[in-house]
Length: 443
Ligand code: GDP
Image 1 (cartoon, rainbow, N blue to C red):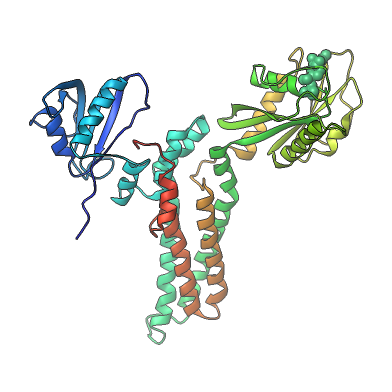
Image 2: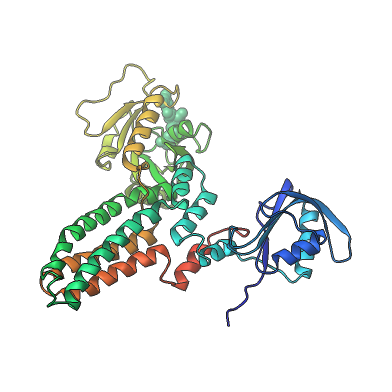
């Protein structure tokens, strides 16, 4: 016998004092609960209606806009109700208590979306896009998440799936009817060209996945250099506030100071690190060790050199794509040395000169290396894992096709399974739990 789901409710708007609060209800008792709260007359489905909400004793709780959604034409696919009440803690508490009295329970994080997924309203990649859209803080994140929520990635993998199915039909045709005249002997080999093309498409998606993941998780930029070259002053200018302590005492920045900003629609963490130098001081030495690690892990390093003294060792730490910043240009007639192998900038953190050029170049660099592409792509390591296993199964298929089509068929099924995992169809509880618990309550 199918299990009847609980009817759940949650505050879908943020908690705290606000003009309006949205309380969502989903499950088989939703309609009855709405009638209990508002009297018997149900509103027209999907239309806003103004109603008094009352508890079981007939005490008025609030005047609210109510919406009634009849499943499956609702977000979760079940019968749903939305109450737009006044946004005070007291109203929310009074309505919640009444809902508890009516036998409802508070929803778990992501439970509405999980029900939508289980009722076939969206696939796992679309649910992930929705989670990302709720978390989006930058323009790039918003665009990428919206595209994924609207089925961008689903569209891509459905194309892959149909190509695998076509190939499977050809391969199994050869196995099942090896002697029939209308199934040409070399039929399976016709699949080779299509599968080669498909493998290339998967490889391309994997190659671009770093962009998608970076848009979600953000980029790291590390500012490195000897003590006193002006690293803290530079981060403060970039952040347009005093994030790091500026001091002419060498070794002041011992731990890493991070500033969050958005460049080209991508969240960026810029970190000011301890000045790189040999030191006897244990705490400072630990700072230097962390600075070196941060520089290694960063997506981009800004190596700072003080034009008024000789400290260009930092150039040895920089790699291709990193920037060399020659600071303190205000101190008289200074020039960048010739033949520096990195892109160079002449700056003054004191006067601000050179910062427009630096910021433009950072934007260009980030855009060209990490910004969004036009097509939907892989945005999570979960996607990358699934596509990697699909690709390796396809490579096995191609290798086996000429030797043993039976094996190629099995490989194709492995590839198909990987696509199913990407879609969330393979029903792996642990994966589903991980995705849905990342949501806030009420979604
Ligand atoms: P850090 O140790 O590399 O983080 O360097 P700070 O930002 O703390 O700066 C060290 C000293 O250099 C401070 O006295 C700053 O005021 C000074 N300084 C930083 N940038 C400039 C600059 O562009 N021009 C001048 N004249 N002094 C600067």
